[in-house]
Image (cartoon, rainbow, N blue to C red):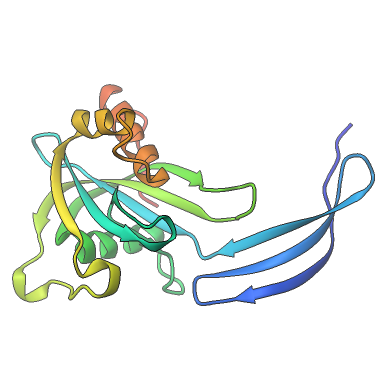
Length: 193
């Protein structure tokens, strides 16, 4: 038997610049209904930037919701209408890590919290890296103003995950996917778009 959940009603609870919150009444497989809060999000991209000697660039940035500075990948919202995800990834890499990449491949797509949010993040592998010239660098503000940039061997970054030092979901997924792709001789990589 195939059952399709149906949204019977939707009430808007909050609308902001990054996400919107709704309460939906949905049909359940039992035939009854239940209320579910849903966060609709613009979506995001993240970048595993890998240099020629096997190091990845990580950023450490303050995240207010968890009241911590977290190791993360360069990443950002898909908040420019009509912009291809790979273009957003290149922009975020330049803004947050002062890098350009000559080669982008798609690593993985992730639903970050599907129990309550439709947010997805598309994670890319960026290689053939060059620095953004000083005069073209993005001026960082807010949480990005004091972000820390570090180059870490990919295998050490994976070890940091298992030691509990990297807990950001996108970073965990991206780093593990990049390590696996490397170990598979890059055969699992997909085109950027």
